Image (cartoon, rainbow, N blue to C red; front, side, top):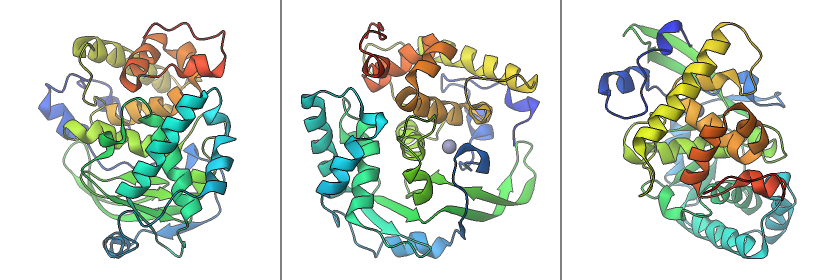
Length: 305
Ligand SMILES: [Zn+2]
């Protein structure tokens, strides 16, 4: 739910504690964002608990066939040999550090784990997989999973909610994915459920997800706050006027979703992100330490990092 109240009072500086708490909520990724809908499974908290007793950390090694297949996806276009080798090392590191398990009838395989790890590894290609430290479990459902329970709205009123989700990142807890949506990611569209959920995990490294992950030395947190806030406000205004937007309106949900959705664009459609908000592209290029636009087109990227 996004209302006019969601537009004001949100800051990326991390100084406005009240606003952060007010707007932080679990991340329900809506139906409309990802293609290929034909299954949904009810989220069973026991699945998440069961994952603790599943294959365990490091249960899957790199699947060579899946690795070769994933590198054929448009998402990985433009990586040079050294970057591919570094990516492979990061994938191996993630497979060793994370416990992948299937839920809702999905039988987890090494190929699935390799594919998920490859998307997530690309995100931290120049950061290091330590950025995903502090949590272990990755639970995968066959398709969307349905969360049903109580949720507090922005005014403090508790509602009974039923959300279909294609992914969820829990603070200090598991990361949950729909395999159907993983399969639809990486193909040059504007979405990637793995990158989206792992972006939430990066954001949570310095507290609740609020659209501002820890920034590197040399990055200016005031610049980050000013630039992302302006782009966020602009998107919210356009969405409220029912304008067509280059960026998925779901990004206007709250600053955490804005960062996660724009991270998807940064990797999957950097040209669209650069066209919509070049200053945000430059901030994300500094944060991820990658120039994805240059990979898309060797002559197209001219972003100074
Ligand atoms: Zn989200």
